[in-house]
Length: 173
Image (cartoon, rainbow, N blue to C red; front, side):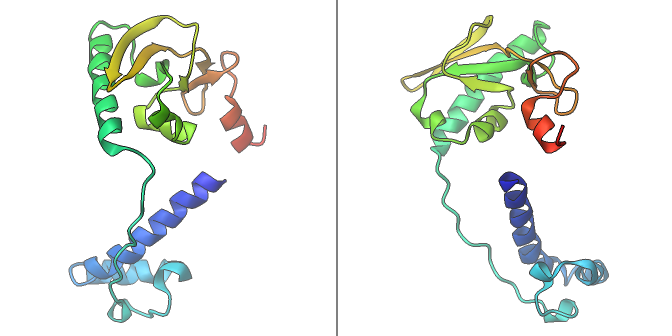
């Protein structure tokens, strides 16, 4: 999967950059790590003394960080109230309804992960639990429309005790 490979690539880049930095402090651990590291991380290095520091490349992100942080902060203020009132136990029980252009530019899965919710949609027929605004965009917090997936715990399954489409695809069910 593209997301899985992207995560693996990012972790390899971080490990490759971090290894020369920790080698002077934890030499034996770094040497052992290098012994089992894949070629993409160790390249030509035979031991920790062959490592050279290479900084991570600068990566441009395609989101408005200030806007997204403000939205997340407003969302979690309402979530804290909902938890205190015992209306929800976790944010995965929730969905967000919005027509925000800035949120629409993100990958839908990334947007859901940003807020730790089960769905983000332009409209929904669920119970409204709270509302907030960021700039001129309005966000409505609703109960997620699906059932709880036993694997990922997202409320995205069509029936209780069945896998959501994403987990079914991963497990080839």
